[in-house]
Length: 552
Ligand code: UD2
Ligand code: MN
Image 1 (cartoon, rainbow, N blue to C red):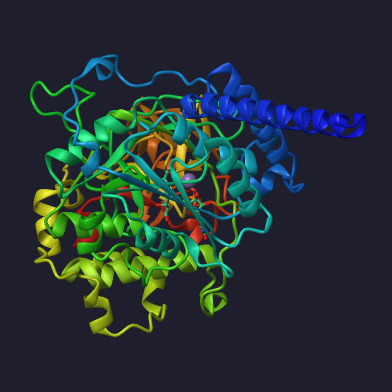
Image 2 (image 1 turned 30 degrees about the horizontal axis):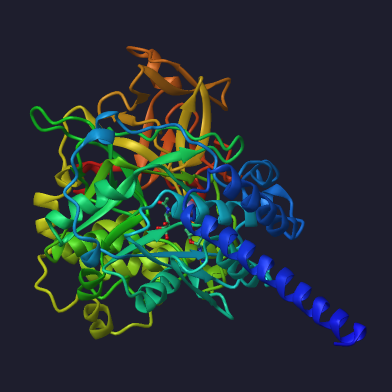
């Protein structure tokens, strides 16, 4: 063999050896990731994720914090998966859950988002995958509802496949035009192939052990739909707080969501699953088969709002149930206002409604027309502007969403599910959370605030029938100082009340007897008094429970 040929052979052998070494190293590395695939908290995986995560969020388009309505800068600095406080009761950790076999309980998670910050969205997904049993988690269906950041979905696809490889399966969709949350969630459900569906908002952090308590309740009764108990995440500090187990979800006659006090049966413990008239918001899990028997979310509802209340009414009336399961915890950022624009619906200018109000009102009118039967007049009493809203739907189209199931009339709901909607109370003429549009009136350290109605510790109000006082549970009353300044004051007695603390109900307005001015929310987050204007949305305040003053 010539010297030149020998050298070439040696070189080739070297190259083959190096390639073989590289291949071996890659296989070992890959195996390491496969083994620890779901353990994002392990150091190796964590460092790897950290690099990917930084790269992904570095491409977040510059936006002011007001764009997202939460502290995006802070979110970018936190880890993809941070440790969370264990907010559920200790006994939830050791309980013996009755779990269905994995072959019959594959889970599809549907997340639709519009303009979510990259770090917040990725944290939602990473916490979900890392805190969900590998065997049950079948797929994630991620729908970008035409977000401004058009590159996001492609990068997300890349990073998720690099971090999690082949499991779970990912399905990505991007709506070329804005379709809204309701359409998108239906679409996600349509492409899903698991036994169960979980609908999740795109700004959540899933807490440890969330799935088993829900599976346990669904396996026992497949006509149920279940909500985890939502733990609030503060939009400014991003601190993870404990949700309130003493509340259930419900709604008022204007079809707005309210928290209602939970009633306990004898010996019932706070951590037990409990029935609720409505879901704890829109985050819920249900069998896919049952969801489709109920024909999914009403496709006539547009963009955002009302779908979870409609689905709750439909479930209860057509043979289902809703439960909130306190052993299952999912954190959610409760923002105090919408972070997105609503596309124009119709000539809402004519009605002095903004597009968000007009959309919600139209959706509510559809619900009232399809489900409330003779009680719909209560809805129109509280929402007179709804009368003028065109639906452009035939009676047949309205009725077709009633599903092939045999459904009860609304009266049944009032008798069996939310009887408090019809209460008569000698002492109070209205009770509960007090809502103006999408905000609720809340007292914190004597300050009057307007906060998200989904926040859990919201002030419960009482409107006293005889005195007209509007009080909180702490014997504080809403009064007026110096002719126009609203404040929380110790509740007065006798004739002193008349000038400062007496309120009169005029339709949905609250008129202050001393000044003849109406309670108003002109700037969306600041309570004021101003001259009364009939039909002004900013002066329309609804209690969770309005009593017969409104109905007779
Ligand atoms: C609540 C529910 C939400 C849904 C909504 C009413 C909770 C925790 N959340 O309000 O699940 O039931 O009420 O419809 O109870 N989105 C889109 N397209 C849009 C608008 C929104 O995909 O056009 C996404 C959005 O990015 C988010 C989800 O839909 O992931 C819910 O919207 P939200 O977070 O603004 O609603 P939220 O929490 O105020
Ligand atoms: Mn949300």
